[in-house]
Amino acid sequence: MIIITGEEGLAHGYADRTREDGVFEYFGEGQLGDMVLQRGNLAIASHALDGKSLLLFRKIRKGLRFVGEMVYEKHHAERVPDRDGNERDVIVFELRPLSAVVEKTEEAPKSEPPRTLEQLRELAKAAAGIFPPTKATAIRNIYQRSRVVRSYVLARAAGL
Image (cartoon, rainbow, N blue to C red; front, top):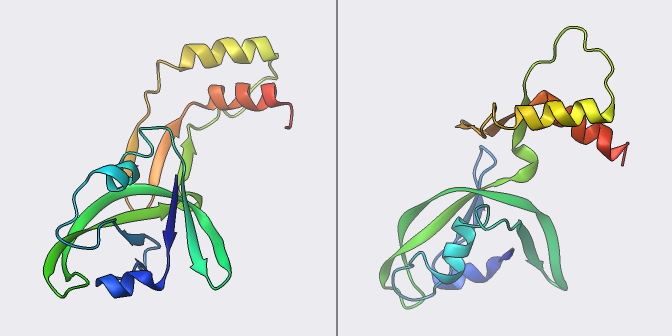
């Protein structure tokens, strides 16, 4: 899914911005009247649930420049004037760069013996039910993952 930021929002009463904590505040679609969470706005809010990447581009003089992949965290409403000067509610999406999302893996035992790919696969299958995906929100989202699943995937990839 592609979203584009640029100077055009100024004509409609808003400007996308980056906060000090690294969150990019992206104004939703809709130029007149209150913005609602439907169509493109709903697609942004549900991109992860829909299994879609959220790619941010900045409009430049001769085209577009890729900024990075973003992750929707939440949204809030602000009162701003529309292009006709009428006050309205706008949706402001709070997006974090994917590069700022940290993955935490459980601690490894002090000495882990070498294992075959098949042994790693069986351990990964057994661990799948032990660690349901959990998420703690602070400045970054932290996802807890199983070390044995990680070991199996890395071994199966054989460095690729």
